[in-house]
Length: 146
Image 1 (spheres, helix red, strand yellow):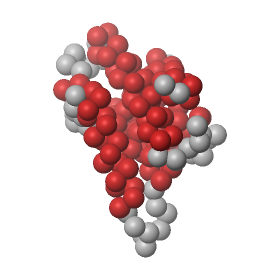
Image 2: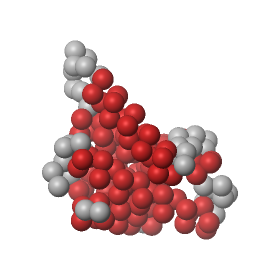
Image 3: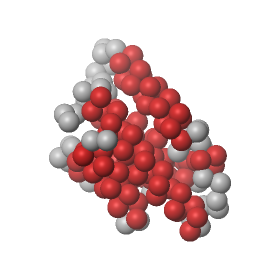
Image 4: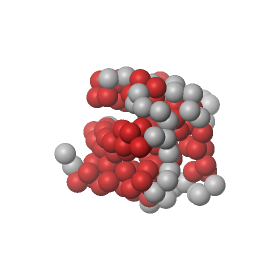
């Protein structure tokens, strides 16, 4: 495990413990680790993804935040550019996440009542683990340097 992956796990976990939801924790931690390419106003875009889209229990917010980071690093800026490269990266990370954690839906990954102590403990572990997985992934894909 790389030093950067451990740092990502720690930073995202600390952001979560500090009150950010899973998606916000991932986006804020990676924004800092990438020397703040996003301004504070744009960081708000991650807020609604916590709890699997506002407690809907759908796609895990940590996964959604990770795909936002992948898009930041490898997304397109012009509609004439091919979308296949970023789609392939997002799909591959989705599959790695699913293989690592056994699913992608918040309600399946953490069976405890939202915001209970047990739920928060599970989300902390999932958020940190996702940040580690994301850093390893983006390093492997050459989206950031080691």
